[in-house]
Length: 112
Length: 112
Picture (cartoon, each protein chain N blue to C red):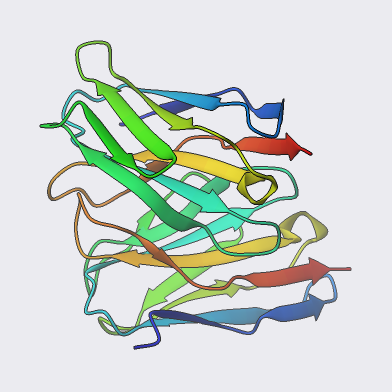
């Protein structure tokens, strides 16, 4: 079955710096890669996703890149702000899949 | 449109007691899931249901049972609660592989 590995588990950076979180997946059939943000005490919510026919997608300060050959995808957050502090989860799935497989999560802390 | 609704939000049980966590979605999604999230940890899949009438074990099914009552509702039952089941439980649903998953607000369960 699909397995998703996420790194790093924790990331602490200064406000204004850029953050990069990386995930690798095992199943070449996977073609949908969402990223979820979970603020303290709240539910995970989708912030951006990418499909396998696209190499990069941007939404304001966040972007996701996908390398299908290497089976890895990354989340990039630029000009980080304190409200970006949260746990971020990557995930992988495919058309008709019964499951969404999550990575282990990254706790991002933005220091003022 | 309420999305995914879980009840209760908080629960304290004594060791050996039983309880059922309820989850309902109004988005006409096929797939529903139950995850547990321990402090500082990621999302671990307990059980999932790909469609009405089907259920399958996830990563950590021991000590739990589920029922997919109809397309809208997916319940999680603890028959004899143990302190190791102290966790935050999330229900989630999505239509099929390759689409966004929506999470309920979570149930914080403490077993003493």
